[in-house]
Image (cartoon, rainbow, N blue to C red):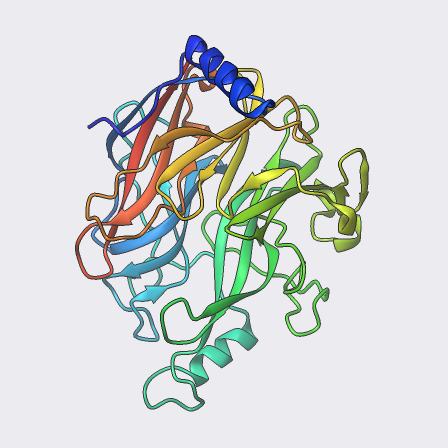
Length: 380
């Protein structure tokens, strides 16, 4: 099926620009690349062990195409009797989406349930256990900590993967949760799971790199091929109905050293606390270099809508273009919700990035069930 999408030709952009000038007296900058087509090509492969999940970040880790997911509802209970996991992961046979993305396999634990990739710390596990069940040892029953994972990069020099995650505290009830802080997990064994080393930055949560009252550096983390020894990170903070995104960097070897991080203040690299917003984006976002268009791209779900949008820039530091539609996500169930996790999967790109693949989760009509749509986007 064809995803609802507004194609923009060069002539159309010129008309839009002229209209803007006549009506407003000023215009922003259009993106450096134009979308000519967007088409849903199928669903992301999902095993019978999975009822539903969200997120869906793919990365090349340990020579594998690894997919990392957030909240995951599964069909086989774990050792604690739970069929809900705060995160999970899968391995794909390779980075080829020309005929869809299938063949994902779910690493499992000794109980045969999908393995959690970013585990709770010993302290968090004890708190979760005390609140488990009804009745429970400590009220409110069902309260828990959860590590919500995001993007990951591979640090080849140190043979490790770094996974961005946010720590969340939740209690029963709709949207009854809040972020506690942000950090990086370390994954060193492709046959194991990630660890959360103690960094002692935040007093109440030793594993966190950034505390609750600070920007959540890790909305996106990435490497630049031109300078692979630096890790770049974005933090997107709530600003009204949107999110203002800032840029940081740190030597890859010192990624777990809070004092080594720097922020972009709009003109130079300086203290992390001096970072200034570059553009309005979203919590879930992909930023990547598009070789075909010779430009950086930032793509994300526009807040509180089903519109998937993008911006471009000649450098990570900007200037970033206006926000423009990539396509409109199709929520077939008309559940009244909106798309929040539309993610470009750069590793699957074709022809240098002329063809992109985007995934997003949506309800599939079953209890706690969801599916991932795969959309092929063609650029001019």
